[in-house]
Length: 208
Image: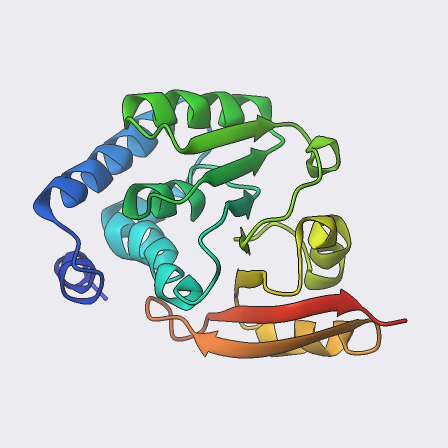
């Protein structure tokens, strides 16, 4: 997927307006500028930013369409992916959890600059975030699946949708949790990388 195809996908699939595309472009500019000061995204991905980061994040939104209209918790948001992209494309409350100080300070500034009042940023380890039930949990390169579930299960209820972008290890990671976790998981192929996948989970709970 090239940059033209990425923007066309947003318009055709998600019906993204020109105003929202402009807001996503502003996000791109902010991240690229900040990447000169801290290591947010790989320099090699900048020429492919719309496909590699924006559409790669936005493709999660249709997978959450049947979830309850509650909060969306994004773990280890980093440079803003996928959580900040979802915040631009959706009005639901978004909680961005990021432990690295420079990154969560940047996320807070970006939420103000992009005029996203429905975004809250938790600066600190996930263990310090107050427990609450959310409708969607996402995490891009946050932790291996067993550790991720251990850390985040307290935010989940039976209806919570888990959206977890993974690389080639997606199916292998499901094997790792088979003996310790219940849940309906399936693997969706990524539209931006033929070697990547998204784990989609519902009804997740510990085995007794």
